[in-house]
Image (cartoon, rainbow over all chains, first blue to last red):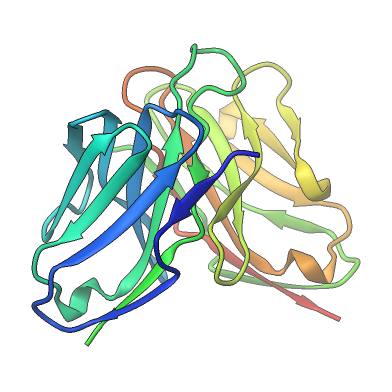
Length: 118
Length: 114
């Protein structure tokens, strides 16, 4: 069974702390994504990575950075946490595969990390 | 601009009643289309997807969706709702080539009355 795991389900941090959110997938997927989810705003893409050490900014990258040193692991870093970064963070992975195949581009999601910054 | 609209923020139905959740998209060409469900405190689970071919797509848990190109819509339906269907539902589109980024709608929260 395919699996995306996230290091914590719930996390409480203080303003100014450096925060690491870890995501691991066991499907050998090339693509990995970090989203944040807020009520009424749906899912917004923070960063994505299409290969090891490769990354691209999503729609809301400010205040975040990422690291992908190994194919299976994609980390989201909050350099200096702020209260407006309190949110649910979701990690996902996908494989480009071959266009036209039914598995193409399907994203698999982890359970999420609910981060509270005090 | 590319976008996905889910016009209903909340929907309440009685158990056993039929359900339709709306999704409209704005995109340069026909994209790949997805519906995901998120149970409380959980990640997203794929219900169904449309890539090509038959415009009526069957998914898991008794859900189906119909792609209507002329209306740029991909509405989700279920003939008889169960209490366990209470969740948030997200429509998403993705390009058929190039980047792998999804565009998500803002979600519809479904409440089921016993």
